[in-house]
Image (tube, rainbow, N blue to C red; front, side, top):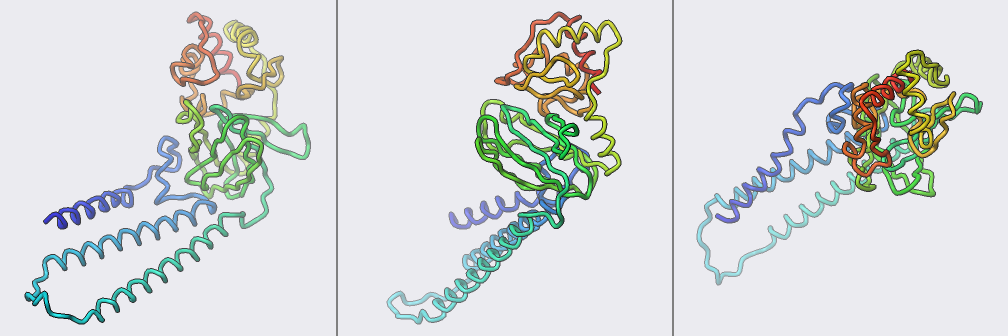
Length: 345
């Protein structure tokens, strides 16, 4: 009875994985649920790995069910009593051991070949990559540099990577402090970011939308809040976005915006950069076009004036351990600073 109970428990445990296989994924635009990648991948760098996962999961479930059925059959099946002193023939039993070993060897050999084929497919893109970016991991945010042969066309942004749909892009991955790992589950597997080394990865999105990524190498107290977004858009929209991002910050018209600018230059310019101003800090995200981003604080909050105020005043409460200090500003000052930041389109 103990053995039967163990079999039932094992079977039920394996059945727990079935909902993962049948629950439908949310829309690709839903950045809040990035990890439902088992059924849905949206790029050629991720799809072969997804298929490999299906094969391994299906094979594991099939083996579990077959073994459970055989064990239950052995327990339930009635056999005549035998004389324990009699010497029986073991030939058939040994034969089944050979058969089982042979089948297992063939299956494992097939899985090795299939895995090597998957690795070959995801190692390099099917066509030449024209676009290249450098992503550097910091504690706990992402610096994104858009490369170009013309230095005047290069620019830096943070925590939001824009790519054109249907085109592979090459990403150089670096770390400024500790080991991080870049992972956008629906577009590609993870790649380590090691201080002093440059690793490379390529991604491609076959559908437009927002894909959420995450650092998946524990890197300190803020690790769980080190997210990013990959925005895949049409080639035309991507080109428009590039043109807008290369521009410097605009002027500030209202009194609140001017007060916010003065506060920013006094409190924030030592760490942050806003191109077109005297703020040229290199220790925190570039904010030149902050208001064009969907989220702030490396994916932690939606980009709204209210969230900007909360982040400026209570950064350590919202993201403990971050290098962004909490500022003791009055409500008027916080509102003015948020108004200024909201002009950075």
